[in-house]
Image 1 (cartoon, helix red, strand yellow):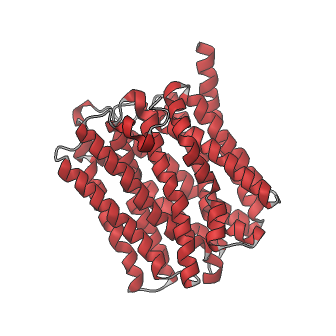
Image 2: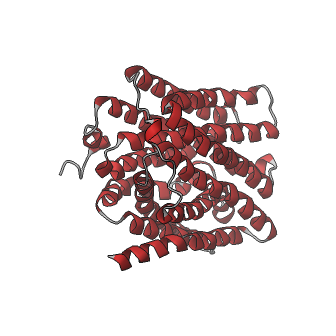
Length: 402
């Protein structure tokens, strides 16, 4: 019964050694604070795009540059984590992320906003795959669903608070101002301190044995199908992050904290559902849960493109949160189970995710410019559904063998 109501995941964390527990706690705390900071900045940039004179295509390209930076670094960072350890890379990334937002105080221009966004993408391109690989190393295999459930709880709690912080900054300044840049610097700075503390407490921090790693399992059909599914899911997520605040503003005429609350509904549902769905990932078919959750997300994304009243829009947001809560811990723990080279596997996993983030905003941005917002959401949803076909085939094959 304790595991069912595991407050702050303490019982789960206590099942690893003291060294691994400290490293895992550092990952979870840093995931929250760094994501709050970056989320506040990206939300403020998106919701103030029209007043700042950004076109939809420019906004899409700015976000694509952010995700392109993550795409480039994720596999390299994962590979590096297998060789030199995770914590040195995490300290370098969070340290740089704490400093770069101050650049706007020297060069106040729209181009500087794009540069900050891209550099934050480089930092995130290191932090996410390396921290996930470290967490996968810390977690016993039979508890990986719960560990990644804790990770996603921290991540999506930050996704809720980040837009609220960005909306608050917008209300304070009437647009983009000093507080907008304070959030990412502060979040990355706290994350740097957490990783520094983990390094000091655990000088022999979790490191992977280079000679026992065989690299990502490229011949494993399940791995390839998982990468395809993740690509489709994150194309949809990128469109949500980039264009949903603007859609909310255009369709319902709300902005600031009110828009942030509506935008945060899927993430609130993820947080509420994660204690239960992470246990499902440890006890049920991870492939099936991944397919079910991602399929539900694609259907809800298509619905966002329809002319819905506010209550129906909110209902779709909650349903999307349920789909994400089902798929996130199952897909992450499935990836971590597929091989010993956790850094390289998570680097490729996040690389596929970031490829979706690169393609999504650019394609949806140009679709919106030449058609409308509805076209952007519907096209991305259809593509996400097609990307689920390989994992459906794998799931059918497994059922047939059984």
